[in-house]
Amino acid sequence: MTIHILDDVTVDKIAAGEVVERPASVIKELVENSIDAQADKIEVEITAGGTSFMRVTDNGTGMDMKNARLCVLRHATSKIQQVDDLMKINTLGFRGEALPSIAAVSRFTLMTRPQNADLGTMVRITGGSTDEIEEIGCNIGTTIKVEDLFFNVPARKKFLKTTTTEANKINDFIIKLAFSKPHIAFKLINNNKMTITTPGNNSLYDAVECIYGAKVSEELLPVELVDEDIKITGFITKPAVIRSSRSWQTLIVNGRVITSRIIYKAIDNAYHSLLPKSGYPFVVLNIEIDKRTVDINVHPQKAEVKFEDESRLFKAVYTAVAEAVKPSGKQQLSDFAAPIADKVLHIQTQENPPKQAPLFTAPKQNMAAAVTRQNLDDFRAAQQQLHPQNIPLPIEKSAKPAENIVRENPAAMDFSSKASTQENKPACPNDTENMQEAANLLPIGQIDACFIVAQGPNGGMYIIDQHAAHERILYDKFAKQTDRIAVQPLLVHLILDVNSAESDLIEQYQSTLYELGFNAELAGQNQIRLKEIPADIKSSEAETIFREILHSLAQLHAPTPQEIRHSCLAMTACKAAIKAGDILNIAQMKIILNELARTTLPYTCPHGRPTIIKFSTYDLEKMFKRVQ
Image (cartoon, rainbow, N blue to C red):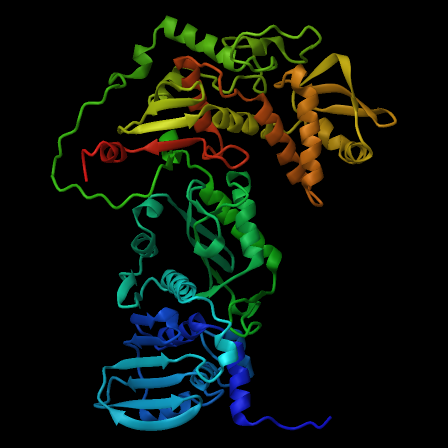
């Protein structure tokens, strides 16, 4: 085997293969160069997904003829001068590979003019070979045209996707860049149609609204965390606004758009049980970190970076997102409702439009003054029916199982007793306060004995899934108990047949199950004895619930203690909650709404299903064709 040195043409095409993967790679490099040139207006135009034509125009500093000649040479750059500069880079580009790599596999034209020059420079290159360099008249800034990408590398061209897919890749990247640089006005023209435009007013919120519309911007939650040398800002959405992929999640580190598994994992953990398995919320996180602790020179396209202390970054991102998604004390239950459908920004043309009187109105006087003794007695009765503390929770009347003994303070059964301890107080300790809080959403009735219908504080209609809402209430109640969950011992122990895998699970997680209210022990070969169960579930359902918990534990791969606890509590809350078909009265509905508003994460049940959705007045008017 003879070793020989490759010719320049082959070298250029190999290098192009690392940098230029598809049309979106070209746009990325060209737009990043425009940003480094301090442009505040950047226009991108593509045809046929960028495979036949791409043009990037900016109003940046531009170049004279000398620099225009140099910029298309390999490893020619104005960004760094020596190796030490790699640890303190302030620009997006630095290698000097992009333009020669792009020019090697396309018909490439560069037109540029600095501010103090009368004429600009044009450089035309075909497949890596320079055709001409001449002076021309052009605008201040730089315009680069790339035509017939991969015309001389047909093997690469056949691996491109459809023009629609390639255009979508470019679209996604421009969106991410617009979020990373909200002070720059971006435009994307695809097949002569304007598809993206941002104001460039340095407002990330306005950029999000311009791209995703009012539906997403109305559901944004601000993120902010400052911790020594880490600063995190940006926006996330409420759990109700999700998509099936991460494509609309944007991570920015020191001004650079990246992807990072460790940051994505922190975001997922912060949302935890708020999302279904296939759902991803909208995220834009701008992370500023000491440049010396980040290595950006680890990926050919600079799409990934390496962090010196990943665990510290993970904790910072997790804390920032978890604090943002947590409801503030000023929010009311109506603020957590999911929107029902895509909406356009609605602008009222009349200064004082007439409003139709609602069918149901809440009393305008102070609720506390309107509450009578009978109201409070009814409220207590309904509350006791919803929360008998340690009696299983069917809404319809049922006989209390004779074999169950509740190990609790008897004072907890009396909702008016002052002798109740803090642990045994009901979730709503002040009846008058509860009646006041219920004014935020006024329950009207039920649909199919499954959904609660309520009127909002400013009109509109809210629909609450009674099972999902009560599931969230119970989950929070269980999760807040630092000691062992309240239990009911069984006079007649349950003897369950188990297989060897289930037996191993019980032995492995016996202490954890005990803390969560299930006192189980081995009672022989392939048998266990269940002696105690959580107080909130029926003894008749104990075996089913316990087996489902074992099944969910078996599905977890190397579960952490937190994952085991969540899985068990979510299953217990699900089985103990009121079900579809349980008929509620108005007072009971009010209690559910009040207690849901008090939970830490009222958006969804522990399995990620929404608890409440809203139909605004405008939505209803549009459905009935009262507005266009």
